[in-house]
Length: 343
Image 1 (spheres, rainbow, N blue to C red):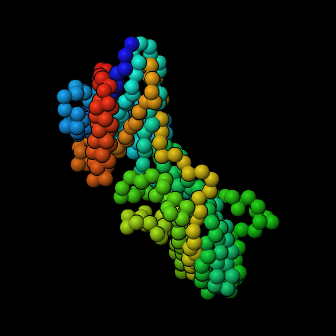
Image 2 (image 1 turned 45 degrees about the horizontal axis):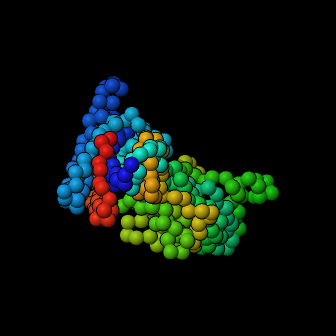
């Protein structure tokens, strides 16, 4: 029986299932294994250097291993999902009683994302003598976690068409098509931000985002019709114009242009940016609240070097390892014995 401070640091590299150019599934698995190991070892070297610098005199190993494409994340919905091109770093810290053992609690992993999807859940509106009003509902999804944020609101603006029949126009007739008010519009759009963001980026200071929606239908004989959405008040690296409707074809001469804007407010709860690693192992009984945390870093396809990560992700890794090592040092200075169980 005794009070020990137990520290376990692990680095696990992942690779997605896809490997273009591989002649066989076995070759793809072998190449993915090598790639995941390279990712894990490159991140492990950074974490180990930081921990040893912050904790001189304390023997702490930082194991790194690759699992190839054998352990895909359950939230990944494609064969090259960004979450599966990742390295997961976890640091577990707890003051324990070594006399008995229990199962470990899940690790919470913070999962911001550079990759997002936009889906227009519904969009209904009407035009009249140059004016237009639209009610819109959208969903923004983090593919790492599969969770999505829903926003909705009324947008107002103008519309132009030289055709007298378009002076008064409804997107749908609710008497004939009542379900059209809740019918998804267009295609799901995948886009990327320059840096990894979480859901608070989309919530903003106004519990929503200003958007602009542009509809453009132009053609003499060959017709082109598209609708796109813009987030107008995000930072310089906002996602730009997201085209969720696009159609080409043949038609009589036609011109129909509309622009509406307004605020889409958050509907319901804001999803969590954390996922739980629910792998269960046996550890000594916890006497005080454990400190478990994790960090997920996603690599570009086929890349494994530290410099392949964005500068923001490299800083997140440095801050994560530094802060956790300093937490360990505080506990050690309080008189707890630091031990390092082998994985």
